Length: 247
Length: 357
Image: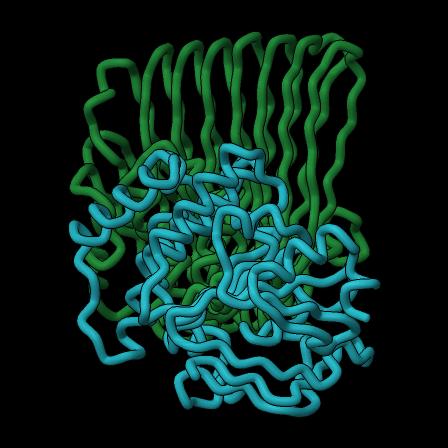
């Protein structure tokens, strides 16, 4: 298994949010995590990425056999973890295209790989941006500043495409998207599906899953996986609601 | 010497002139010819001063002695007297480098630009050795109709204290663009008073304050809109770490008949350590009724959400902090209209950030 989460417990501000979460994701698989508000979906994403303030109190997380929890956030990125943020952050004064080159080269350096040249990187960035409907002008602007909600999510997908992660955790990537933008983003995810890559898609609604078909669907309730199933589980949840489906 | 101002005076409440006393009993150590090459930005006219005495001068201006030095009535100081007309526009970047080697020195510059004259000046104040010095600077600036002056000042003195008083009078359609960088270990106080005296006059008084260890830097910027249809900007960014103290007092005064004045003021501070201090005092004094006055003032720490975002993409924490701090300082340094000076000042400021890691 690429990702192995075992009996994970985590707290935020001293309050238990994850209460013994166990989940395995194999290479090449797409898993969807669904669940009601407050179930711990975003907390799971942040704990995997190592956000300060999200304290692991028990359990383990292994990515490709390595202890993910022992790594600092930037080391987790170098290990192949990408988090698509629910609310991408605006960073005034820091150019998107410049910071992403620095990020990729820091990852490569960490892995002992050669750094990307400026020309090679810019060509790649331009291609990925165009595919997701963002101009290079927008990429050069300060990170996410003045972007619409949809543009921020597309920018996340451009960054994911550049990072080529082993595991992409996408936190409510579909929220705030109109139907056209949803298609663009879904196409971006589908284009990246590969036997060497896994996706963990966190979502409230089955809408995104109509475009990105998951291999497995999990229902997260009160910090634990209450039920798992195939793609049909998403439709059942949509029809019955979380309370009845999880029962 | 008349008595120095004290902290009991409101306008000097954040100033640290304690380094002056040590400098007054210190003899100058000047025993050589310092090399200004490391501080050069361009290849235009250059003056080099050591302890207030010019050792390299240029024919575009003259050395002129002036009395009545601020903070030191009995002293007389020499400095650069620039008297420029429109025909001097191609003089290039005018550079002044002042080395303090210990003891007090008084320097008085005087820039007079005739109608439509243009000039760009960069002044650098640094120190040789570690003997306490007090570099006391006075600058008088007069800009006639349509004249444009860009003036950049950086101070990196090591021991003692530094003081600066600048008075600027801006005529019709004329423009003064001042940019200051305070980054020395010795406490520095810089005050600028600008009077916008005729319609179309513009002034910007921008800058960056970097306070580390025990440095206590403070600036006072007062822009008076004395005529209608005048505009001003004050953009200040301060970073403090260790026990450093950075203080900004910026005031806009708009006179009764200075209608349609447009004033912008943005003061922001970034605390790198909980032990550091930043004071910011924005002041607006408006007597006209048809004016635009925008102001913002904030002191805080680097945005933790943004730091995590950068880290998640793979940027190591030290670099993430540097990227964000550089972006913060660039908000003020980027206001410079001279790309070479902007690059030089950014280089100095970023080196200061690097040194604190």
